[in-house]
Length: 378
Image (cartoon, rainbow, N blue to C red; front, top):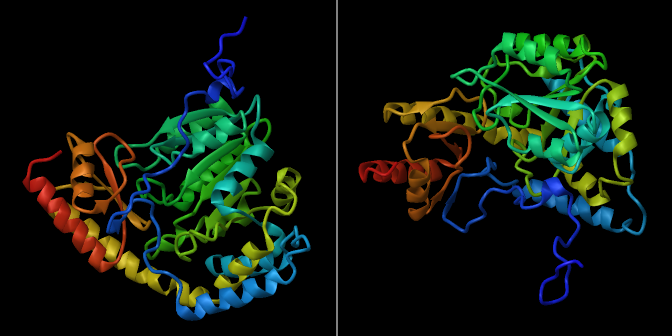
């Protein structure tokens, strides 16, 4: 006889997969505080001109909402290819582009297509905390190597681990989240060549969610696409484009990889409204990206200030900085929150991550951190 609660519901209800029971859903704290620097958002919203263009585009799309959208999002793929072509001398064509509802869905679709039972996904810690969840959700075995003390990749270790575990998917953010570390081109080449030696020729995904914030002289992995048929480079409009609320991520890869993803994507997965918003934003790309230089400068100033305070800071090519170390990082995090500043308690023990905000927001962060440290917290 099955035990049940007082309402008559059987124990173990609902019938969730065993490996998911007791788990909490992913998500950074959503708290209403004056200074929110915890999820790497762009602090500068779209201009009035961009907002007006988006509104007009959505109004046009609304007239056709009784019809399904273009499931191949042809116009958007062409626009994204044009935008990505700026970062590589080789150019990108629409057949090399795929998009979905945020880079999260892009990654999930990659694992649906190339992962699965009996296959391995691999990365190197510390890295983006959602990667193992994509693997879990697609029943792909998750394998995690390690990074060096400065958060760079140990290429010998990486090559050996790929050879040993034969992953079908290697996930590598560049800049890395939460450390901000960028991958040099030679590292991408080593890993693509190692994965290509696998029996099933594993794919290497270089996640450039923060790619537009990279420092001058740091190339995009897009330049390596002609050399490696197993290379995938993903991007998002959430960060540099200040469109976190629009949910549009995309990738560039060999057309055969894009075609494979089409097998697992849900029908009409990009709504007509999403496509309209993304196209309007791309029309305003120079303006939206105009704040990137300001954020880079603010990042570099923040890194320098943190180091002047005697703290360790990871080299960052992103719009955030990982800093530490603290004996009790949670006490520091809480002390900042008590002063109206929300940052992220993430990464290796003792470290904290702060997103780069406006000059005023970073001033508030510095003042709050100074007060917390003067009180001896952490």
